[in-house]
Structures are given as C-alpha cells and as structure tokens.
Length: 145
Image (tube, rainbow, N blue to C red; front, side, top):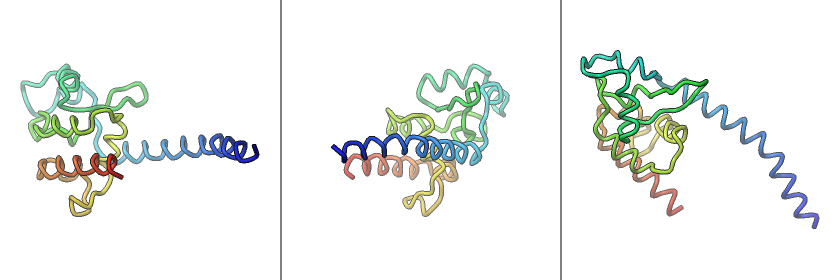
C-alpha cells in the first residue's frame, strides 16, 4: 500500500513541474520564430491573399496555428516569399495528424539530426522535402520506440 501512496504523491508533485516545463517550451516556441496574425498574413506580398486566407488555409490543412493570449498565430515559416503556404506543409501536417499545434511548432523549433543539426523551420523553404522526410522519421521513431 505504501508504494501506491508514493506513486500518487509523485504524480501530484510532477504536475506543477510538467506545467512549468510546458510553459517554458511554449515560450521557446513563441520566441523562436516570427508569428503572424490572420490580418498580417493577408497583408503579405501576394496581392491575392486576403485576411481570411490564413483561416481557410488552416481549415484545408495547408498551415497550422497556435492560440496564444486570445489570438490565432501562424508561424511565418509555413509561408513562401509571396505569402502563400509552402506546398509540402500539407504532407508534413498529415504526418503530424493528431498532434497539437504547439507540439508541431515545438518540433519545428527543435534541432534535427536528419537536417544536419538545423531546425526544420530554418530549412523548410530551402529543403522542404528533407523536412518532410525528417517529420516522417520523427513520427516513425515515436511509434517504434
């Protein structure tokens, strides 16, 4: 019986620690890149992009967003120089189906050995296929241990 109490106590004590770690991870994700509101996305370089486009692209699985401080924020790295979604994002987001947006953003913020130590967000525009393969490898690694 003592062991069960110790396990319960560990779970209770771990909750604040986990919450603190998640808050730090979220802050690192937020600080690591340029985040755009839907209005900002609509004002980007592509003349045909409206403020509703970001929401539509998210619904179509072309981009992802996080909710922070009551605002929907899109990571700048999911868009090309014209302000349109990078084509490979559709496949990358399919790979991460079931993941929370913050978890996806965290993966993009983490260095990756398949990308020679670079962060996926750093090379998504120059090597989108490599980022897709790294995403597949990441998810397969979680499944197989």
